[in-house]
Image (cartoon, rainbow, N blue to C red; front, side, top):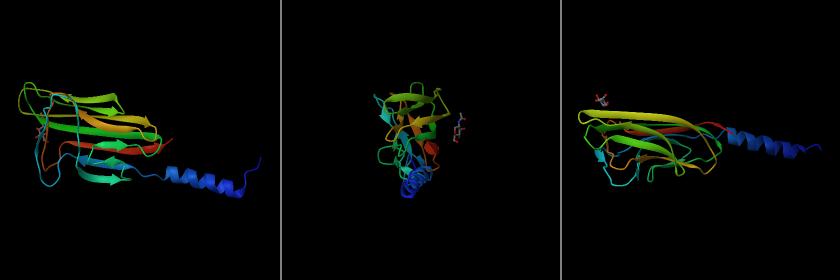
Length: 158
Ligand SMILES: *[C@@H]1O[C@H](CO)[C@@H](O)[C@H](O)[C@H]1NC(C)=O
């Protein structure tokens, strides 16, 4: 069955609007020159990265720390943690997709400073959520120099 020109035009327009979707964000913890620790808390806690460097497509919410995939596709994320050495408070957080732990960044040592990071490529369905969650009893630090960051972008729609 031959599709009408109108139908073909709609198909092409729909395909193009998906492939033209632009999604990319980068954020660090503190806004307005604030600095200090987040944690330790006695429960796992979503890290909120309030200082937005880039938020093309507004899929990242800087008030909640949660990224919501606007389209089905393959996405890349990375997160960098900075902290201070402490006998019982590592710089430790995991990237979570919906409720599921995907990858972890962890560094713990008794003194000096610590830096840990990780990255992942994920196939997400539209509406899937991704965020960075501080481990129970962990602690990170950030300053006006923006060491502790969360970034992500759509590589390609599927
Ligand atoms: C962690 O990063 C900070 C800030 O960039 C740096 O000053 C420090 O030397 C790093 N710590 C280690 C253990 O590499």
